[in-house]
Length: 321
Image (cartoon, rainbow, N blue to C red; front, top):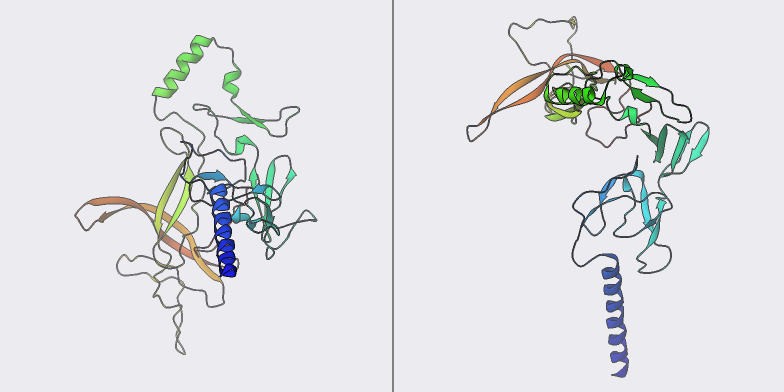
C-alpha cells in the first residue's frame, strides 16, 4: 500500500512539474501589442509557438522558446539540449538541411551572412536567398521627382536617390507651397516601376498571379492580382498524329477561342510566353456582378528550365541588384 502511495505521489509531482514548465513558457492569457513588430531585413514575421502573438523569428544560434520560435522557413528548429522539459533553447539547423556554397565559401543550413555591404543572404537547404540592405532598392523617390539620380556618398556603402530639381535654391515658403500642390494634385508624373507578373500559382486549373507596381495617381507601390489558368486539369497532354498527318504551327480558328498552353513532347515545360491582362465581369450566385483582372494567353513557349514553374510550391526570391 505504501509503495502505491509513493508511486502516485511521484506521478502527481511530475504532472505539477510539467504544468509549471508549460505555464512558464506560454502565458495563460494572450496579451499582444497593438502593432506587429518590425523585423530586420531577411527575418520572418511569424506566430509564436503558443499561438498568441506575431513575433520576429529567432535566427541561427539565437536563444529560442515557445514565445520566441525559430525561423522554420530557413530550416531552423529550437534545440533544447539534453535537459528534459527545458523552456529555453538555441536555434540550430535541422540535421537534414543541406549546406550552401556561395563565392567559394560553405555556409550551414539556416546561416545568415553578408557577401557584401549591400546584401544579406541566408542558406536555406542548399539554396541561397538574398535581400537588399540599401533603401533605394526598396523605396521610391519623392513624389514629383521626374529624373531621380543615384549618387555615391563618401563613407557609405549604399548609393542615395536624389532629385536634381531640389538642388535649385528656393525659399522654405516656396517648398511648402510646392509640396502642398503635389499632395493635392493627382496624376503627378513619377518614375514608373512595375515588376513582371509572377508565374501562375497552379500548373492546371484556376490560380492567381501577382505583381507590384506604382502606376497609379498616388504613385504608391501596390500589389496587383490577376486570375490565371494555364491549362484545364483534364486537358490531354498532346495529340498523337496518325501516319501521314502534319502538325501546323499556326491554325486559325473560325471563331474566337480561349488559348491554353499544352505540353512539350520532348519533356520541356510549356509556359505562357506573351499574355494580356483584361477586366472580366463575373456574376455571383446571389446576382451581384463583380469585375476581376484575368490573364489572357497569346502564345506559349517550351522551356528547358522548369524551376519556379506554375506548380504551387514554396520558393525563395533572390534579390541582388
